[in-house]
Image (tube, rainbow, N blue to C red):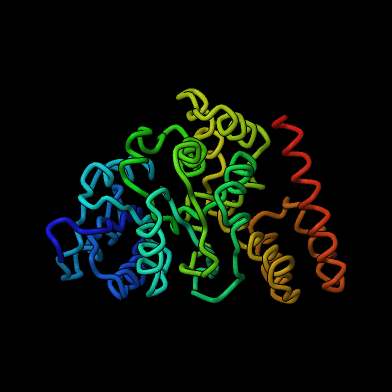
Length: 328
């Protein structure tokens, strides 16, 4: 490897002992090898750090900080990275072997590109396939147009130019759970972006993740987030309000319920398997009996796939119209 690697794989990790080994191995198995692998242990209390340090590969560098959150971990990683390109990655995801090769080739041949993402496959906690995700947009103009309405990239799939992100101040620690989305809204006017159609990542849905299904968040939480996306920044006061709201929900029953509810919806809308949907709805309701939408989804699960598909399209259209109305 050159003294200055071409790519830095940047991975924050917090209490990820169950999944981090598989994540690290997927990076070490990349067909593109000229990279440094910076792992930021964000004050884990389990074996995360020990597992990360157990890999005898000179490209791996582990930094440990007191638990400060993902934005602080990423900003630390940006400050120590030597490579000009940053490949974001999460400690519970699995990269396809050609991920770095494909994304490096795309950004290297297009000097005007500042960021490239990709499609992805979603898996559950036990690595079982759930559904395939295609980005809502692939070209820069369309990505720019929707960026305040929905996040156009999977955070752990992106490769970006370090200098462009550092020039904007890096990640905002006040943007609790959407530090990536807020950053993209600031980055998009300063360079071109794209998504690759190939699935270059397996994203793990997990109840351990800090981000539960956003539809489980109260309206006040979502309003603060949308206000910040519209403005391009968030105040420390609003960031603290979001943390306080989330802290109330940071309980095992809510996280487990949200996880199973999300799987149920994916097995209804994205990968029609109604029996699996009902299985996960039973588990969601066992954890959170007050989850009223779960009972409605249970009834919908008995409808034919084509009827469900119509409901889904109508719901997405209504949601999109509502979000457009709030922004205008």
